[in-house]
Length: 298
Length: 298
Figure 1: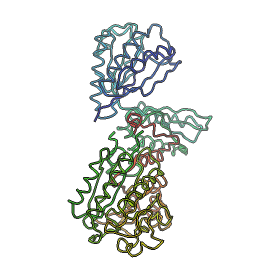
Figure 2 (figure 1 turned 180 degrees about the vertical axis):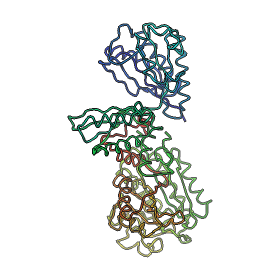
Figure 3 (figure 1 turned 90 degrees about the vertical axis):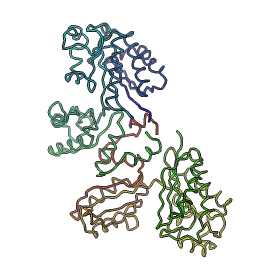
Figure 4 (figure 1 turned 135 degrees about the vertical axis):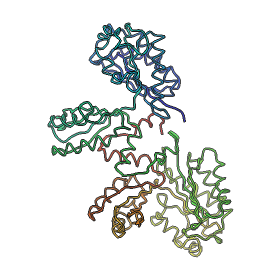
């Protein structure tokens, strides 16, 4: 079985679209890598890129992208709403097929080492690739952003995993490995935002809920709704149905119904299969029983 | 997108395994056709074969299989518990990818015409390919089996769709098209078989329930259970979750809990995705959002 990895570089350019295209061209030149998606945001002045392919190919594409971004983007000139510390800001690797998380961590380290050595850009390993517990959290790695890191990078606390302890105009990069992230939103039949905020507070890890869930209560009063907007960062550890059942119980406590849900963007097949087998009460189901899997071997 | 069809010929030989192997060899010789599964039953004296591939390839494999079975199996010598009327008894085509039911009906007709013309074996089109309403039902097509059909084939009621109105030793074949069939069993936490029988009677089409469900109440008292054993013959028209919710409601009426379920054999991906989207309350989900689908394009 061919191994497949996804890589989602975020670059600090969302306004000069010709520059974005020039950087994307580097990815397109690598045979065997598919550019799944990219999305530029002018307010954030940032572009999120998703590409996929065999590990060595994706590694090469990520390397070329980082090199070109470092050449074209000057952090001293960069302004935008989204926190950032580098021309290429974050580079997560996500296992898609036939890959372990460990192999994705190895990819992150291989890339980081080369970036530090050849481009002299400081690299911080984060999430599953983190070398220190506090670096698992991207917000902590990026604390103070480019400007703040410039002041503090020489301290032992901020020593990069690869590359020099000083910042050039290309800034620094967080390179890491993580499970696929699923954007899962559940709508409540109420316009009372306080209820949404209370449920979001109860479900998210940061305030005592599930470790793999980030959540906000969002006002959709124009539609007569409140939304629990979630990022599920590990649907194997914390499945979609568990989030839904939690919200269902809490909402019932407030006498509020659930009126639908949505998944924004992509979702791994296994995350959906887990939902189906849970609600059907299938105790011995194997994904080998899926007809298409037997035929196409994905 | 490459079109893929499944074909599940049933042949009237489940004891002489060397003959079964000789017939399977015909399928194996056709490049591009995958023999997914086969299973011989000595009591039934019958073998069920599942193969898959592009339509023209599968058509060729089915043709070769039918020719060889006609050569090797003599219905005058055949005995077994399972009803049958031909050496190759039934040949359903099932759409798997990029195929409509209409295209499967066309395959059935193409194969049937050739079998009738070249092998002089009477062919009856059945299920979605049926030329008369009463022939949709395989049991009706096979009424009287080989021996009974020999007597009645000359009547206008039994005139075959292709081939002569007389039976040789290879008998007759039912060729048709149908959706994928899913074997779905739900276990009830009771040993009272009467409850299982009552629920099975309520859910199956033949006694007033859902048109696409066949069901029996089965005694599993050794495990302290009763099972509703179902064949779901069209999970697009009648989804798995609808069967489960019906049983849940009926079982609650008897004060009996559902203690699990099982899917025996293969299930189409869409049937499982329908379950996941139903219980999550996803109103706008597209299968294009499945990561693996984007990557492998199945």
